[in-house]
Length: 328
Ligand SMILES: NC(=O)c1ccc[n+]([C@@H]2O[C@H](COP(=O)([O-])OP(=O)(O)OC[C@H]3O[C@@H](n4cnc5c(N)ncnc54)[C@H](OP(=O)(O)O)[C@@H]3O)[C@@H](O)[C@H]2O)c1
Image (cartoon, rainbow, N blue to C red; front, side, top):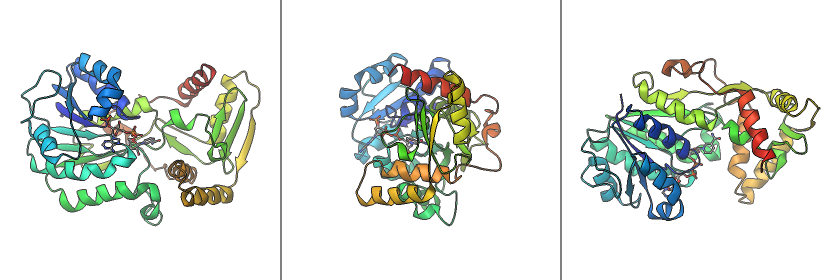
């Protein structure tokens, strides 16, 4: 099992949940060593997060992810951490949670990791839709392109290093929120108003962000089951109409005002968003992919990594969504 872990992208949206679980396990003695590789900008702008991690025993390496020599030094163990007690144990696992704009920075890191024999396993930044779900449509989906390049690099160039793609589908914490453009789906608790795609009857498999961190730890605890594959995990599966019903139940039982957005309109506005360079275009496409049913599998893999029955529920996620909007 992994014992010495280096994380890239640890202070990001999902990285924060991943590193929190890893730090918890470090404190509990499950792992010998947890470290993050981050930038000076992050240290300056997110000092609270970085200090909190340091106080839990997480080592911090500060440098430029594009500086191959420095990255190699960190991975090989020839460079001391910028802060934290240096450990002599070499890294055996690299976890990447870098953002969408930094997906290709993983290729040189993979190249280095492949050449350092102590590194056994790499988790590329996935944590979303299965980018190879449908052989006909997935290869041309714009949001998948960079992640597909990373998978292609692994297929062609990685011979020794093991990998795991943690495929989680959409994060329920985000999907259950109120969006700026409700026509891509939105739940407005104060107004008791929901906008859902199509007829609201399509099932979607969601993972809560807390579960993403826990599922990653579960994958680390089950190295054989998680080896060299896309692990398709989730917290729960629900239709948008079931989500609306749960919101109604938790907000006094009154019916919500629900609007349905036909697929034609979703496709048209998605095309326009891409043509106009709308920063929300990627999210738009992903929401269409999810509404089309591309998070559903005959069987989920939670049980393979000992997580079946430990997942967060629709009920608890809606409760959090209600609390978040009522206290916004
Ligand atoms: N399933 C879903 O609903 C969903 C939603 C959002 C994201 N995701 C997936 O989760 C993964 C992480 O996304 P995220 O939204 O968490 O990422 P993010 O917050 O945008 O960025 C994560 C981290 O990446 C590093 N980073 C960002 N830009 C960089 C650059 N130009 N050069 C070097 N490092 C850079 C930073 O690391 P430091 O922390 O070290 O500064 C940053 O904190 C992605 O694969 C994304 O597709 C899935």
